[in-house]
Length: 428
Image (cartoon, rainbow, N blue to C red; front, side, top):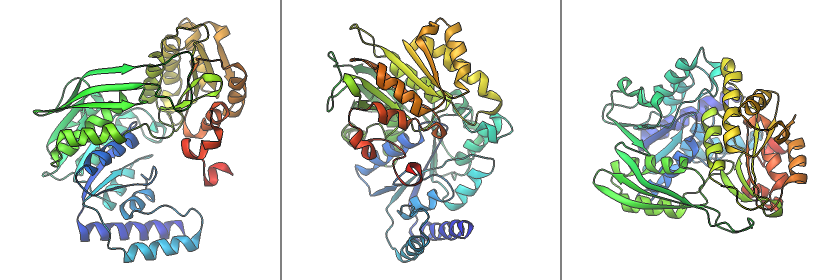
């Protein structure tokens, strides 16, 4: 049944693309895909009619659903039938599609670009997430680069100039290549700063952080202001977005104004939430790769302890699918934790490597705790969190770290609205 649905969905999506010929902007990478896809949609939306996926739809089922503007009906066969009929009849297609291309094994990208060949590609970063399913890291890099290789010569490939692995892909592409970067490139930022208007505690409804940057594309310049953005990764996503938008005829000022108004961290991706007892949660529970864990720790470190009870607490769970890189990458994270955190709460068997590395790097053993799962970690934090604590929560999807966040958030009644994985099979 699933194979039939996948084939039919893909066929309908290809048919609609062939008929309406929307411009397709494809986004891939190990980290930052969803935030970048969201930012591009906002920036293009300042001038054009744009469609993107309702959720993180980026595989052989999700991609055609995104093309068709539909949501998955789960296991309901009758609803799937109605969806397929509705999709066949629909004549609704926007000018632009912004699609996310996710890969887990060799050949996945080829299958996805057969469904929706991109006119433009954005490659965000490469990290050894999912490398367990590939021969080596180079094979994973090849898989990501395949999106850019699918772009025709009259299109555009946009590369993250801050990631050397991505920049090294440049000779592979027949389409023109541009870069975006926090320091230099065809689109770049200057005067990046963050303000922390914090007093003694963090309360619901407050603005916890304000990030500002000046964006440059060609001869155009505009000011970006993002509320409750604790990391430069969202500035990087904004840079990719304005590069795409300007290339497609949106003035930088209009694109940046839209981003300043609408762009915010996606649920589970370094979203700032008020926590219990006047604490602050950096909810990064959606997933984890080495690069994104480092970004989360850098964001945590920016909160400088001041009052007696101000502590930076890193709550990190296993990073999955790293294959031969598992021990080394977890140890590297542990070394970084020692620099960024005052207390380390480790979750899962692989995080024991990080614990050892953190202690070796100078973090006192009395400031390191280990738990087998997210539930136990949440119960511990519920007891020890104090006013003014800043708590980073992150782990691979399989570790279900949103359960930890729910246990310590100030508004658990809003979990469905604010957290990831709050529906369907995830709650069963």
